[in-house]
Image 1: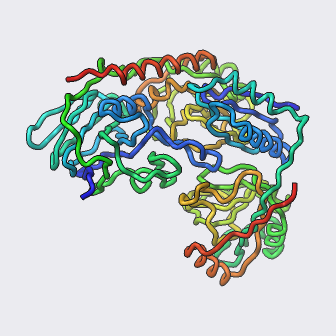
Image 2: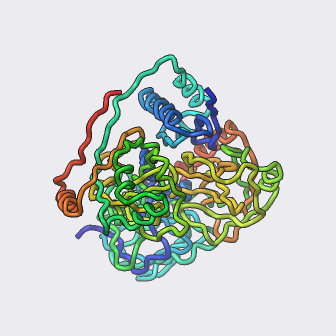
Image 3: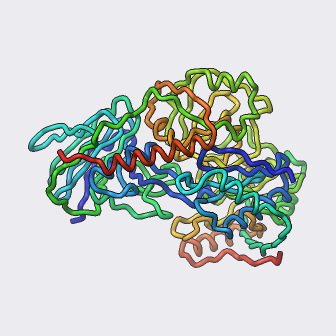
Length: 319
Length: 240
């Protein structure tokens, strides 16, 4: 029998994601991948996986799963919730540490709490076909993951390993800082000149909140409206993850990993790559405040973050 | 020359060739793209051409904006004027009733007969400007001026895959069922996007497309052949 996790309850939006699908944006296929690349990488490290191993992304609330393999090792990162193990020796394992479960054990991850997304990594990874080089699920295009869609009840998520060795479990050396209060750093442009001086002033001095219409394609924000100086219909340009476009409504949308590859609204600024995971975690209702940096500073911040992430993956502690 | 380098965060550089658009601008975008691919620049992940610009995505851990911009400036040097042969796709197109829900309305709004709309649409050779909106959706132009209409006031929630559509100065084919606001004047039985292909989109930016009218029974026959993987879309190379 193929080793698997059986889906008892799917959670509202659970998908398979690796680090994303690159090289096909010129034919309209977005990168997909995780909203929070840092948590995915740490979860994979806790179970001994390379960063690009396919794991489960949970939004708002986690699934209930049953172990259909001799044994599995799993770890959850990105939220305050824990893994509730419901059968046999019932217990809760907090986020940020690995645990080994055996056949027929059932576990559940409830409401994620403060964070909108979290990652459940499995030692060896989920076994799904690579589509255009990636396991990531792009639901709108029905591409990747498990049949190109979110998990449903009675699905089975195949696993690459049928069993895992007993060993000391591992934990993060310190809890991941989810940075809910951090200002979000952006590089102004590419179309900052499409906005009035007042709009730019408003953008950088106001509190926005993540609206309920936020999904993997984009986080719509609520807050003060931004006035266009030159109209809001531009000829289409390519789009990067983190681009902040402002349509006719005057309210900004931060484009996230399932973004359209081209688009025709002016983009006032772009969230720096180091802060994409930090935006990614913010659930509807959370505050966002933007601050401008230049590209060189953005590149420095990303390198620094990457070094810290590498260190976080290397300095796991045995528990 | 009027080329602008615009910042797109720390993972991409946008090269904008002017706010006015047209074939000439598109050809410059695509020429730069071909050079970027040939140069195999370190850290460049992929490029996305549009009607007026090229977005060059890079890995900020492997290179940086200044290096990418410098390399792109060198590639923009126009002293070399290489030309590439162009692929011409002949796409079977059925304009018969049942495949063309908006043809009568387009004829009425443009003051032409349906037959004239079909003749104009199918005797024009189109340039593929860009692909996007949904995976594999080609924006092709330019539509003959008499066929130019704004988008529909009431977009459809579901446009069937294969629908041939027009709006503003462009024509397109919907590769997958999706929402859409363009006028549907025909349908093709071929597949434009298939994840089993190494390159999942049939048509690339820079290709040429011409629609070849077919009758409803031919549509059915080609669709059956496509389903059996026994149909190849006619394609020829045009000298540069």
